[in-house]
Amino acid sequence: RTLGIQFFCHLICCTIYEGSYLFREWRRAYIEKDELEKISLQNQLNTLQHQVNPHFLFNSLNSLSSLISEAPNRAEEFVEEMSSVYRYLLRDNEHNLTSLAAELTFIRSYYLLLKTRHGDGLTMEVAVDKQLEACQLPPLTLQLLVENAVKHNVVFPEQPLNIRIETNGQNRLIISNNLQRRKVRVASNGVGLSNIMAKYNMLGQIPPVIK
Image 1: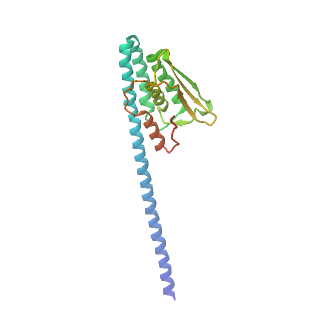
Image 2: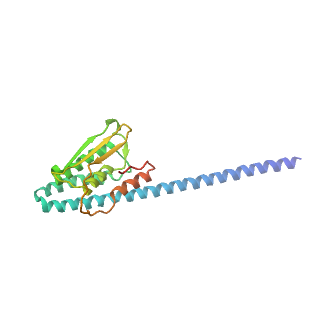
């Protein structure tokens, strides 16, 4: 009877030890898997962020090329504005998220760059609730959307493109413009909207609505 009790206790101890060991191994494997997924996600986000810099430079150089032939006296001013904006772009694009306030500060600088190129052909209005300026979004989201609007629409003083950045009562950010599509297809590397959608998807957020 005594031996039976000892064997039973030994069996319980072995079961507890083995169960504890298996749980520790499972937890270690789970943590490693989670870390690998985080590293993979970060690498993918880094890839998307690095897409934006050449995308911005590509489109800025196209604008500069047009400006040199159309209004050479404004080309130098454009280069100065571009260098200032590009410094911001290189600094803030290293983070996964930034505040709406920072994005608005940047987009106002970027707007000055566009005004140098387009003059009275472009207007931009900002009507954002101050209480929402602490909310976060992927860096350069506004820049990509504004750039996309300018690239694919006619922008003339007699036919101005009007861009509006605002928030509504449902705490949503809305970027809109009047639609006046170019008849001639413009050169594009296809980064803009797809980059934004991919970032929101990787961050596990509700994707933006494009209309």
